[in-house]
Amino acid sequence: MFLINCPYCGERDQQEFKAGGEAHIERPKQPTELSDDEWAEYLFMRKNIKGVQFERWNHAHGCRKWFNMVRDTSNDEIKAIYKMGEKPPSQ
Amino acid sequence: MRNKYSIFSLIKNAFSYHENWQKAWGDPEPKKEYDAIIIGGGGHGLATAYYLAKKHDMKNIAVVEKGWIGGGNTGRNTTIIRSNYLWDASAGLYDHALKIWENLSQELNYNVMFSQRGVMNLAHNLQDVRDLKRRTHANRLNGIDAVYLSTEEVKKFCPIINTSPDIRYPVLGGTLQRRAGTARHDAVAWGYARGADAMGVDIIQNCEVKGIKRNGDSVEGIETTKGFIKTKKIGVVAAGHSSVIANMAGLKLPLESKPLQALVSEPVKPIIDTVVMSNAVHAYVSQSDKGELVIGAGTDDYISYTQKGSHQIVEGTLNAILELYPIFSRMRMLRQWGGIVDICPDASPILSKTSIKGLYFNCGWGTGGFKATPGSGDLFAHTIANDEPHKLNAAFNLNRFVSGDLVDEHGAAAVAH
Image (cartoon, rainbow over all chains, first blue to last red; front, side):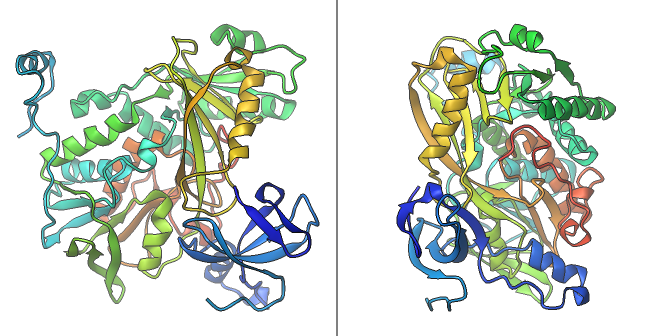
């Protein structure tokens, strides 16, 4: 349980948000040309990092907008929050 | 040589005030090389080492553990054992484990306090009723004992449940697996450790793995806080930290690690003599031999390795518990804790070879791995020793995420997380 600074609504309880998993996984540009291995990589394989991780969050019980977060999963400390489409901050 | 535990050894040691019991396992320094190394000294890892030594005659093996044995999810779960899974592959896997549980204390000469007190799953809406009836039929076709109970039969089996029709989620029925139950979690780790150690397995505690050394497509050994150890076979049984180890080897796994919480109440006299689980309202409860109510809560939905978990998850579970068992309303909770569970997209485990020769993974048990401990160890040992899966764990390979042949147990089992 922690507070999240929604880029649209400000600081709110984490309970209002839905975690969307690893960020910056790009949808394949030409899905018809993908092999089964490449599909598995896109759909299922995750870094699942212990440490600083880039992830997506949705303010499900608020503005319902998606945004990105940089968070340390070993202590839940939030390092940065940025909007969809913005460049991730360099670590 | 290990001394056998018996009533006679108990009496004999009583004369020396129980101060001269033989150590149950040793504390060796790592050798330079092993035939196989198991990463992770929890129940599954120790069981793997035990069966490698016992059934596959691999004696020169080691279990390396970052902390102390049984200190991870083995010591953090709610100790429920059952095999009433929907799909054939899961039924085969979990019932294999249940059959080993039934004779485990005798086999290990260590009392794992396996108690077949039954597990009851409740239905709270029409879809639950249909799903549970379907699961009962599927279980019986697979030779697993299961009965469907009416609301009255549920009440009769566990009288403290509130079966009144006017509660928010009334009890419409339930299933019962009588062979299911609980066991003492620590004893499972300790019993397997003692058994493995007696056959010459080195159990190396306080030894964290820092890297996996590869030579092209095969493994050469592991870098640890106690130095480099050479080996040709590595079995990773690291639960929530499986992805961390996989990343060391340059692999990605289809896992997400999340905190799962449990809590126990103050100890009271016997009040509930079975395990009751409810998927729809997410509440499950049993009573430990010490008298504490053992309650399982849910997972947080974000990736975290903090072993804590959020307060509202506990609150939600206790709301449901109180509606179903009004008698618990004035009980106080004693302890709460979290464990990091590695969850697969299809909520089924991975017991598999990988694209790297000599590297095997036993992971993805998610929220329900304890029950499978003996079976998982047995089948994983088979997979490592033969470099081929046993027919019971063939479906739980890593390649199913490429082929699409998933074993989708999400919600089909007992408590969906």
